[in-house]
Image 1 (cartoon, one colour):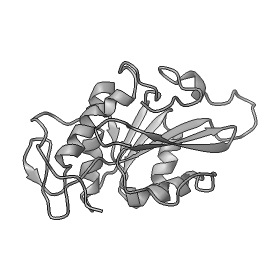
Image 2 (cartoon, rainbow, N blue to C red; image 1 turned 180 degrees about the vertical axis):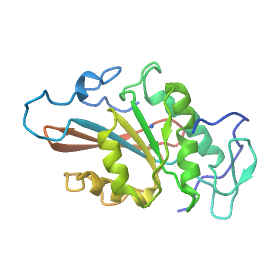
Image 3 (spheres, rainbow, N blue to C red; image 1 turned 30 degrees about the vertical axis):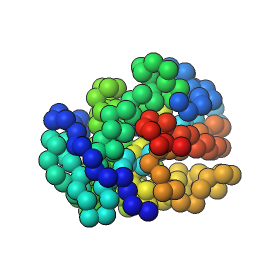
Image 4 (tube, helix red, strand yellow; image 1 turned 120 degrees about the vertical axis):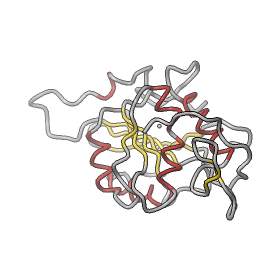
Length: 217
């Protein structure tokens, strides 16, 4: 299915180099819900909340996106994608009315192999600025096993922005691929959040809408 048209590009600005129903245990910071077990407790994986999004909209096939400086770039987001990126902070505190927990760690695809890393980093740039949180970009698409290990060890909650074809590999690397209701592939949409919650060693899954732009389901 073709992507959204490029439309107008972003305003010139610097890039820092993720209303759905509330998640269980998610407060304004989410800190109390994600503590590790006390010393001497049974050896189970720590509680975790890992939220996963696809990068925002890219241009139609053959179209041209815009980079962070507003210059034509086929590897960057389309105009609609930049608008989604600018509104992404509305999903998380301290934005009024947000119902997802504030991410304590952000990850986006890195490397030089494809356009997806630029789009993933562009998608979370405004959020990183709003949260004053750096984006970890040391993992390339294809390195989902290493990403899953780093995300699981990071402060919780975690937001990962990734290329859609690699998301099932990330879910499998987390050990959450057999959770009931987890899709086998990412759908042809940019307006979703996949939330994986691990409590007492067991994962649960929720698919949440973003509702950030007209036309979002």
